[in-house]
Image (tube, rainbow, N blue to C red; front, side, top):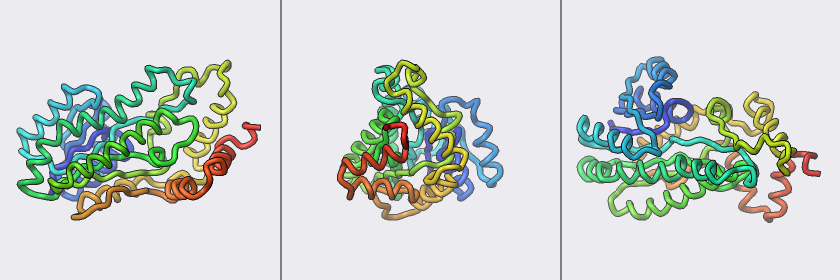
Length: 290
């Protein structure tokens, strides 16, 4: 069994993956920025009969990353699997997103992944040499391949993660450490509710994007309430995939999760850009654009 570190375990894919992997017998270090939000995780872990080790880790705070790595090294002396999951989605059209908001999105979703990976790699390389089976799994999004309007900052952060992950895949191949990118579509997790972030100016009635922002908000509301086609029914399928990747001896570089995600990537690849854009805008905004 592996020693696993997962970031962003207070909810969503991180929480479900921590609970699933611990129940399967892996040693799971479940980390989160705010340990006061641990109750949902602990309840899910208990329900499945597992056990996790909690760590405070803020991906934008290098001191907490170092503390987490030092704890894992002192307690286990190895780290086999790193799952970079922490992140959030920022809603807002580009002109409504401030420089600070855009930078904060990149700090968490991209630079946070870089710094956790940078500090984990010495221990992962040692574990790979001693035991084999080490992996780095980065939770991206279909937005990293097929972005939509109104989520430009989030899409940018995931495109950056995709490029970093693919380059790292080649760099770590000589060490026998696969890098894996997981690209989920839309699932009913807290990213759309309690973890949702919206640009401050998105609510400004003077914004030239007001009608689009409102249409986008209504679309998200419909999706989270199950009223729109394309929202993944159960985020558990993502944690199931992550377990399969952890157990795989030869995982692929990319895994797209969900029919909606596969369809978007397919349409983007084969439709002329102007036709794809028209189709996308009609689906999101309907008659609002007219």
